[in-house]
Image (cartoon, rainbow, N blue to C red):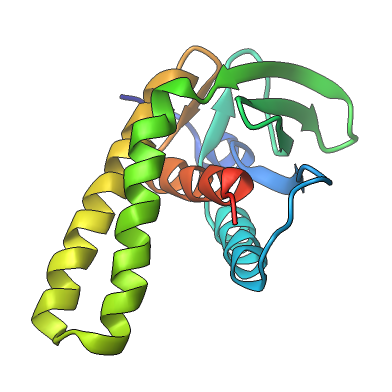
Length: 168
């Protein structure tokens, strides 16, 4: 798993291996709840606040455009002048079980916050974080032929993908 930038990489090069702009296109036919809108905004903010994202044979900073058709996630990566660098499509099939389980645990977690003891909430949250980590690790492995990223960035992008495909 490509989690860390190479040690011999200069800090200037490392500083350029970031997503500086992120645009998400949601399905116009899909209704999005206020909570989902909030989660999307937080995920985008978190990605832009701190990330490591490096394309092979290109230097950043990068503009990342993402969209979904509910079966695939489309990545369009551009330079800061909005010139295309690369793009690729990632099937969501391998993520379906993790995402479904993640949504169920999140729902249980939000219900538990209102009614359960702190120790019960903590146990549910540990399961939620484990599924989130599993999704992030799968994302890193699916993206590694296109980009190098770290675990925190992959966790944030996984969160964004979950929000993009949420059905409520």
